[in-house]
Image 1 (cartoon, helix red, strand yellow):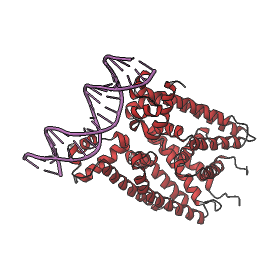
Image 2: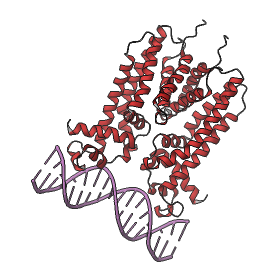
Image 3: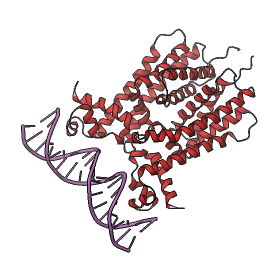
Image 4: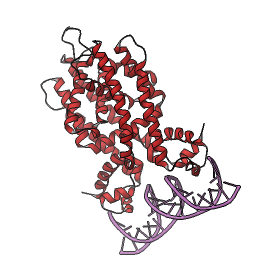
Amino acid sequence: MHTKEKIKLAGIELFSILGYEATSMSKIAEKVGIKKPSLYAHYKNKEEIFMAVVDQMCVDYVEFTEASLAKSADTEEERLFVAFLDHVLHFYSDETENQFYNRILLYPPSELEEQLTKATNESQERVNAVMENAIKRAKMSGEVDNDLDERDVVFTYFCLLEGIGNTITLYSLTDIERNAKKVWDIFWRGIKKSESR
Amino acid sequence: MHTKEKIKLAGIELFSILGYEATSMSKIAEKVGIKKPSLYAHYKNKEEIFMAVVDQMCVDYVEFTEASLAKSADTEEERLFVAFLDHVLHFYSDETENQFYNRILLYPPSELEEQLTKATNESQERVNAVMENAIKRAKMSGEVDNDLDERDVVFTYFCLLEGIGNTITLYSLTDIERNAKKVWDIFWRGIKKSESR
DNA sequence: GTCTATACGGCGATAGAC
DNA sequence: GTCTATCGCCGTATAGAC
């Protein structure tokens, strides 16, 4: 692998765990296995490494969401639940990657805030659109209540997802799966078309 | 007000917005209106200021949750919703204070992690207990489904709350209130005792 | 491209006068 | 308790040899 790529990967890991300020050029260099000044042969400065990581994460995030929803399923509920659980388990298995995305969105280094929102807005909107379409399909199939606005459903969906995401460091894998299932049950009961109509 | 108290207040604001690493002793001193070395007459070092802020925030958090649930209400749903909305609006009005709590829990400075979890665990557990009791009462009054475990309900409740909390910087006050109401409607529908039984 | 050496600034923290 | 002066360290970043 090219050094430039290695630097990006080291950046993903370190920025995710330590945050922007606590990640130093020395630590990145050490992880790559080169000396600090060599980094500057590939990236202009620390910000440029960081933004390269951000762009990569945005692409991955959209692709992951689309792939989760594209899996075959018998019902729309099953499709949505599989995507939900996929997402939660992805938090767990690929912890650093997802910590990064949440962390930079919530607490961006103040001097990069503007640049960051520009980079992440687009992917956020694409993910929202993908999810809203999935809910629309579930409404058409008669599984989800037609009276609900899909934007509200998607908003609630992501609140739950992020809320669970905030807890992954506190639980074991089996507990997380259990929690996700319990949360989903309440959520689904809250949006499904009631049988008595 | 005593200087020691002023330093703590400056710390709340700066640590919340900038995080631990990006908040420097110089910035704290500047906000207080004294020179950097004077800080050391009141606190041993930066960590001690930070932990003083943490302890204060923990106390406030428990008190706030208890006070929200203690408000008079005609039904348990109303009581729970008022507490939910209170919490969300508190995120908005007292943004820095709540950013602090979420931020340090999610992304603690690694060298203080152990100390921090010890300090926050107690208040977390107390808040959980308070909420679980509230759900138990709502089950006894026949408003919430008895088949649900109150721990799962509370877990879902906090996922939603934190999820909304993550969005407060993105919306206006009216949008936030609207979102909170929409999220609550789905949640309540997911946990309420169904009428057809 | 990678290295050694180094510049310069800001950090947390201390010494000691007032 | 607050100040000025200063320490040692580590941060980002650059110069220039190989």
